[in-house]
Image 1 (cartoon, one colour):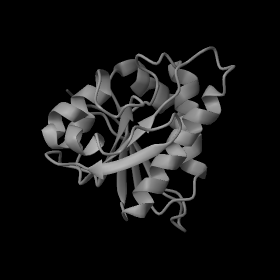
Image 2 (cartoon, rainbow, N blue to C red; image 1 turned 120 degrees about the vertical axis):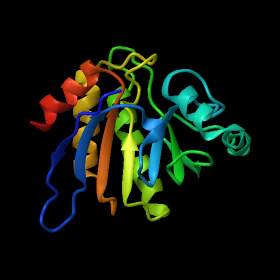
Image 3 (cartoon, one colour; image 1 turned 90 degrees about the vertical axis):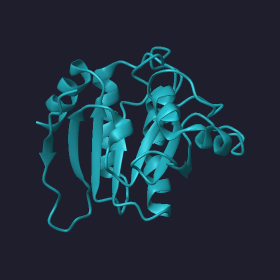
Image 4 (cartoon, rainbow, N blue to C red; image 1 turned 60 degrees about the horizontal axis):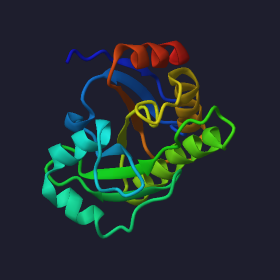
Length: 179
């Protein structure tokens, strides 16, 4: 898949991570941490979740079995096993129900919780998928605004956050919000 990068310079005081956006496959990202848009069982599934489990190898599933699942809006961390990334942060995004069941707050919590887990392991770079925009049905435009706004405002020591888009529609949404 062709990669397209758009970089936003970090603030001089380095309080905000540098934001990047690319079109590609999150499983091959050369970062410290990749984030998995997981289901609550953490035992694999379709989309990004299935791709990460396949690329990481069977050890990831075995490790996830010990985590007792994950609540929507929360995040848990495992080693990356056969991935280029050292760590995988598994977060469970909300299923879209029209925005009336706390979906925006839960999606924001996914990004904040993931950055907190990244800080716990000293990660300097993190790659995020567009959480909840696949089979969970969250509309791309509002999900993108939440992702960027949360990452820009969350307290973190992460230096680089890369949003890895699976399709052109999502890439275009990130480009629009990043200017």
